[in-house]
Image (cartoon, rainbow, N blue to C red):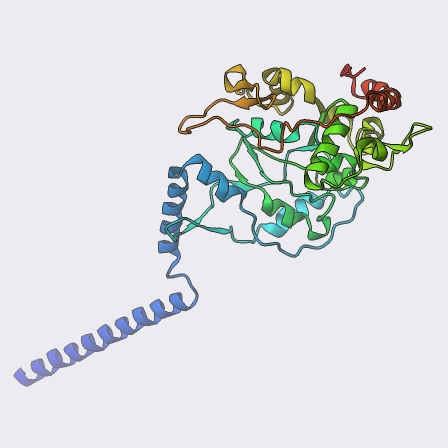
Length: 374
């Protein structure tokens, strides 16, 4: 009996030892299996991503804008047809749903996953016009907490449409619920294909057009080109086909852009007038708070931008934004804004005014606003 009891205890010990070894092997096998499939690192990665997201909120607003506005590398995307494809927006969103968010890097070299918010197509676009005041409008809008705008001009609907809607959306900054995504490219207004392409993305997009006296705008356009090319012919030689007849050369882009009524007719084939807001470039200078009130109402935003944000810079002849908190100086437009215009013969300017008058009157009727350029 004694020996039998020892044998039982000995056998039980061997069984227990084998069970322990088997259990350990199962644990090791499970660990390696999860690591090979990448699941074992999911919890630490999620924790790190959360820490990175929190860190994004700790950095300054200026640094956060730079991270949000940084262009990601282009991605291939099937070319969409130019007709009104109501499903294009949904298709592009579905195609982008499986992509990982782009990684950003802070100055200390630590990668940060900029995952807060969502990249969206612009709900509103400043589509024109060149030298009308589009840069000022965008900079004024960017101080609104519910507006996130791509700082550069993407030129997607006129130059880079073949890159696809996914590429375009990836350019946009991330927005939270209740925020508006915007961009501005003033050449859209005069691009024949742009209206159908924007409508392909979303026919409900809000469109802002900053317009200015077309004569003054043409001179400003010429002044900008002259600063880059000092050997440019005179304004009058470019504006007039023949100095003796006084016929205006509408093939010159500086003149053609000012035919607002003709360009608007193209856009109205795809968008109703209710989707447009026409901002006066002159009033944006003389009464920036008043014009910004109209813009905020049009975008469905709370009126945050007001008189307290502006002061008039006598040297530049433009309004500037007052010094924001945490900044050592106010924000004014760059050196390219407010250049002195060259002297243009008065008879040339008058010929241009006579030429534009019927187009201006037609534009007043179409837009429902009299901008008082005559």
